[in-house]
Image (cartoon, rainbow, N blue to C red; front, side, top):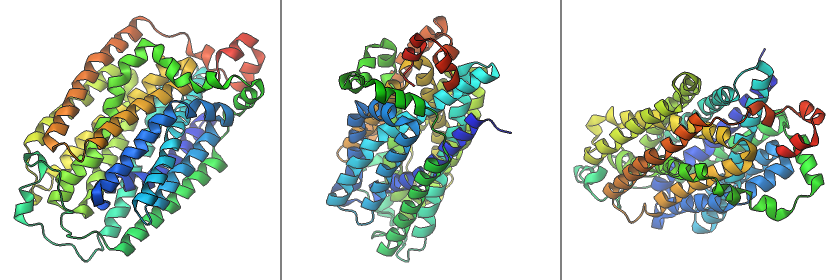
Length: 463
């Protein structure tokens, strides 16, 4: 029999699987589907700009008042609104729903990370294990299930768009503009001189709306309200609003968090590059928009499997070795993409890059999330809000210069961020190794144990 905490991890994971089956599929298509005046990429920029704003104050307020479970449910509703906006895409529909999604993005991820951290430490205490090891395993399981959303979301788009009757061969002159050899600012939709048929787009978006609503239902019905008592006590204590409002920014006083900013921002840069630049300038340009789904499925499948493997492997190798592997993989891909001229005859190569990228991203996601949970145990909500804020800043910057910087320079920027991240991150790692945190069990007590401890410990943790 699985433990109740592990059951909750599975429920959260499946909920995110369904939600991001919809959102992930839409995000991969924005740069190729909604091309008028860069509307698709602009909507993504607005999403992550809104996440930055919401990260500054919303996660601590929502989580402390609603608890992790209902913060996740409400935030999922914000994501579903973006799918409705894509039914009839335009500036008046995409931008407002992008803002709504962005406002829900930071609370969603902060609540999820906080929930997994609490569950991991409570289970570690019961089993007599090290809290960081259980947290790593829980994040590995989560990302194993969550990252597979890219498989299903992109499979849906590929199968539906594959029914388009307007697919044609790509002219040789267009192939000469693909990749980093040309500036890459004016890329047509590949095999199709027009967009996919409108009825196919509506069918796809309708499916995405359905799975998004199903995600909300799964979490609302089956997830335990693990921190409901703490949320209730917080509402009764009526702490000053400014104290909660500024919790995210106040944590920036910690030098360890500041040193992790480049690593966190790089996570946003590398994800936005694959979903925005690689799909447009390599896949759509040389193969056509209907191939985006298949290529991103490869990325998601490898990402999913590696997330599970690295979550288990971290307790034997340590984070540093895994981060080094991810850095080497991304560095090699970036150098290769600078020189590769994509062509339909090189079909396997189109899948090698997302496979390597997926392996690296699995490490960035699982290990960085776990690292934040381990380093900032007493300020989990604020820590994960900072994580989402700085990662979103990476997304915003990457999407912001997407429409006016040549692809070659975007690759150089990505390379520079990777190098900077690997200069600052090891400093935190070495400090953590020489100065281990206080015993995790004393910070993350189960609810029944908390009620039996003195008031000082109850005041010591907010969750």
